[in-house]
Length: 87
Image 1 (cartoon, one colour):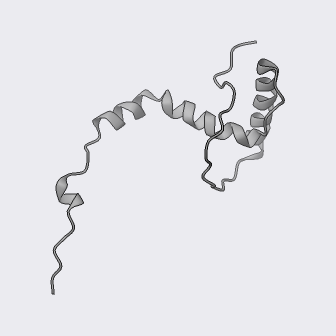
Image 2 (cartoon, rainbow, N blue to C red; image 1 turned 180 degrees about the horizontal axis):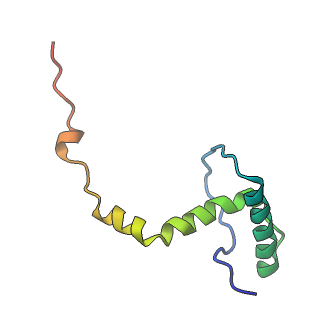
Image 3 (cartoon, helix red, strand yellow; image 1 turned 60 degrees about the horizontal axis):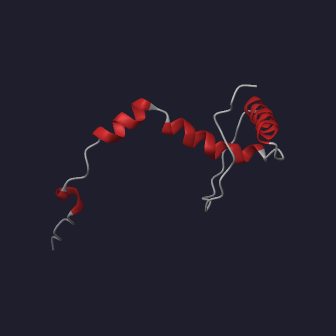
């Protein structure tokens, strides 16, 4: 079997969001969880737990996104300074 892009899942403090997935994507996540369990020798994780590491992996390997983040200008002091009150 080909080596999967995801490895064991890491625990981290969660931020709760709600998202709706197409049924076909959920079935693919379930199949991926089964493949990951087979590859790692662990029990299959809840398919929902795959979403975060998949998104992290996607973002970490997106070269265009990395370049955009490197070239993004930091906020100027003008933006950070509160405007004077007029009264």
